[in-house]
Length: 330
Image 1 (spheres, rainbow, N blue to C red):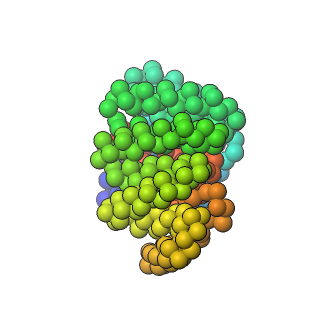
Image 2: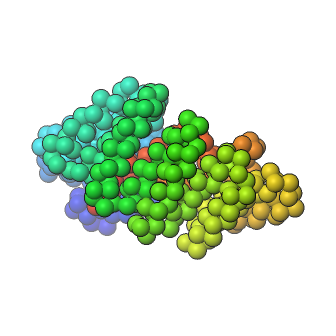
Image 3: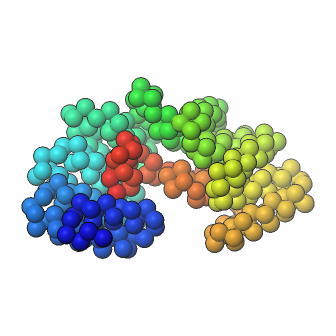
């Protein structure tokens, strides 16, 4: 490891975090931060603090995350990097929303959007519009949230970013589903699956199909839901996403149970249990027969109850790399 080169240390810290070693990544980032400060590099300081903040939030240390990101915003401002200042503000706004403080998050996200517009960052504009939508939704301003989501979707389409468009469409679908507007939710999830396929992201496609299966189930069409669950399971199995496959099997069991086929339901539940045990994951059968389980697209492969408000909390910005164009530096 390049202990005297803060840039190399920073890159190695991000690699550690991607491998799942957040604690080691934090230690490496703290060393890099000291080196950047010794050099007087506000830019490097901002990058480290932003990464430390997002990792701290993932580790369940929200107040430390907020403190780091507030320092990151200040360092980016000193460096004159308005683009990165906006990204840090976006992360800080999202965390405030996740902490149940959307009223504090909205002004931060509005400022982040303004900075993205000032520097002409179309991806940043779309991301912050999506972030704002999530914050407005958390405040109960659902119509305003939907307006932001569609504005973000328009920009993603203009950029030809089908993967981000798929993400936005899933969020739109979930918002309509939560309002009981199942026809609109169905259309959004269908479009999300199509956009994911265009992006070549089979996992995202399967995730959208699971959400679509949930709509069909809520609409009282279990046979259609089952067909979609089976399709999603096949895709998850093909891309070797075991949690997604297990979630699909759980869904299939719920639908079979609804259809009165208890033997097939039990077989699906047993297969899901065995698969989860093999990968060390625990997931119970949905107790509310009005809901299935779905897969988080922000984490890639982790099930949560379908119909749960806010289950895609960080799709647009937090915790990725800015090289991808639609995520901020870790």
